[in-house]
Image (cartoon, rainbow, N blue to C red):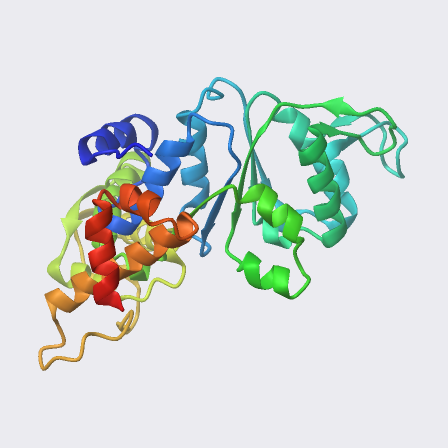
Length: 326
């Protein structure tokens, strides 16, 4: 596995993922997985809470792939009515069911040659999961009302905010489909776990809203910055974008105040290290390092050589860090 250095990743981000803002190690890790998978047809699963930016990651994967000139088709599986899931995914013929007044091309065929993004795949009903699995295995679809298989050439990227492994255990998600869609898996950590990204994102959104709303906000006050860093961000990046939009639109010009953000009483995102000052840089860095090591091992199925490469470490260095972890 080739080690991608920071310069290579920065150049790749500027070209394919300029809308993905942040400097945290967790975000860089997710982007590096996407970067390495982009030139293949491997199926990718992106996990993460709602609002973390999973679709942006999928767009970057498509943009950096050999399929970039073809369509990127996004399907929100959670928004599909159960009765129409098959029609939406596979298409239908005229007269296939009441209301089918014409032939419809399904989303899979609409993405032919490109990328199909199945957002919130954990919300697909079990019977639709079985039919999707068969289509992915056979690389062809049969529209509702037809007996004729139609081949397709599509790269599948799936995303979910749900714990698919737990759903498999509970009988709510097919194990064979899980294996099919998670050949390569990465995760976008929630914003509360990557506070380094809050201010770069906030400043990015200020400029973006200035541009489209024709405002002249010059920055964020010290109080506003403190409020942003203290907030829990349960809605993740989407919540942050909305808060900045509201503040910039209503402020109009000058500096955004803490009150303009409308965040209410600050809440601690997570427990601080147990020191008199509530801060301990060494402990915080160790926590982030340990989390990334665990994620790398999970990503590589416990293969220490591949995990070390993914982390940019020598294998012996990783082994020593694991020994200290116990």
